[in-house]
Length: 283
Image (tube, rainbow, N blue to C red):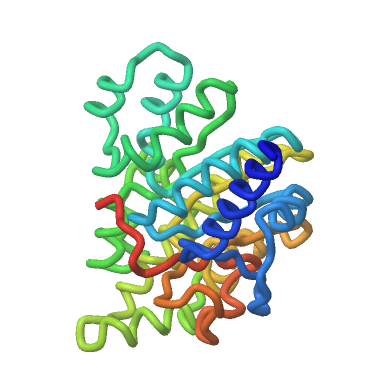
């Protein structure tokens, strides 16, 4: 009787959990629900994975850590992130090596305001496992220079400064739908140089990803979803230089109803993490 009651209680618990509102669902590009395990199995076969996040989304950050730790058990792993800029690589390396502590890193590198809650766990994972962690993004001041004066303004940089950006001249296709969408969203505030400022970020991240990639490993890169949605942005630059590599992409979206992927969110990545729009944010 005791066992029967225990079984009933456990069955009721499972029913209660399944009846709760799911905070997120994972979909493939066609809008079909897939399990985390199936996504993992697919991505572990890739050479590079771009994990597109919403910067303040806790589900995305949690899944980033879970995917990182699981991929680590499958093949050699290299990590990199938009959230640390290339000219702070020395400071990041010093932290990873244990020669400076977190307080020193925070005071010498331009960490994002949500670094401690959202990205420090990923950096610490790299530190614990002795992994390379690449500061891939262009220093924001150079993106600002491009916004004000176009790519030509980068010609005035010193040799050292140019080492923190993608090699000049920067390849650029202003007609890519993603860049055109930026202009549409910005309306009267949009300009060709605004799109160039986005492109210098994409190009620089792709450059440092490829520069640090090792054959036989998997490079997992964390970036805002817009930098890799629709297989553009960073991925456009990666494929231009290394079309032979196998790429995987993830995007994060929010919907009021997570149980059916909206048409506008289909096809933006290999896997789409659809999070309930009522989910709390990290800032």
